[in-house]
Image (cartoon, rainbow, N blue to C red; front, side):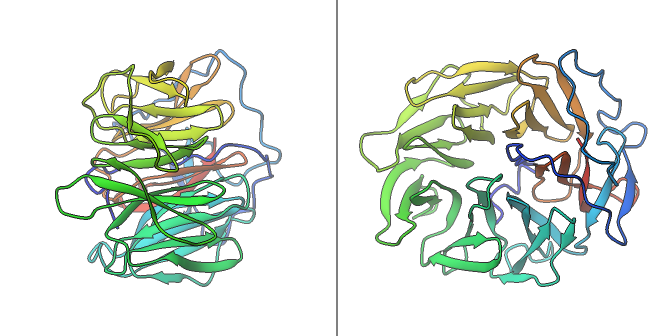
Length: 369
């Protein structure tokens, strides 16, 4: 299920917590130089005036992101669909670009050793993965829109398991401590419906309608749906009515969104160049940071930084206190992968990007952030 094929880039950065020492490189890992002359945003930005990042706990086998990256996973001729982290386990969904709607698989990687597992899990379609809590050994949930329309649950140490089946075209997904939520399409051209089911089992319940969703998030009993022109929210139990979030230019798609305990954050895909925050008490979003990003494809954060993928330009970060922005890693304009993601673990940034030295083929790379 590749709902964002037309977009091209996404990002998922898990909240930073532990600062584990980076693992030694695996046999066959290849150091990769940063972008060649003329590649977008190849120049190193000036360091921020604010407090610098804490140094790594131990020497890293990977270069700093501004100077290069190390190849961790090569699935060619297949492609990386997307990935999500649960604690020190990274789940990577891969597919055959010659048959993007056909069978796929999931590869797990132990981030404490940077070692992919020998066994792959076969899936009927490339899965859209989302983590409920990247820093904990929490569940990862996924959807596939095959004829059987399934919702999957993945947990470190256990094989993927289908927990809901026979749903019409399930797409974007979110979860909290008690329920899993997803969007599904009941008829071509009609708005998607967001539904939920208790993790313990039971009936599927309606929650809200959201036209053309690009992401779902759950915060404090509310579901937030970002779509083609705005953000809507609704009580997670389905009571009440849809509420539109204002305070920003409407009419632009919103791919870049995330949730923390303090609020729902998003960045419109437009030149307004802002990161906004909404909460359950207000119908208006407030700007929390400016950014040079014009085409915000995805957003996440650590305790110190917001991370934004600027489509076809760079992964950028903005300090949450000083507001100073840096380019973390340059991206190729014509990225040929369906999606691109980044996950932070310890002091390492893991992401799907093209190898400039090997003809633009995308790999899973990592570097010291």
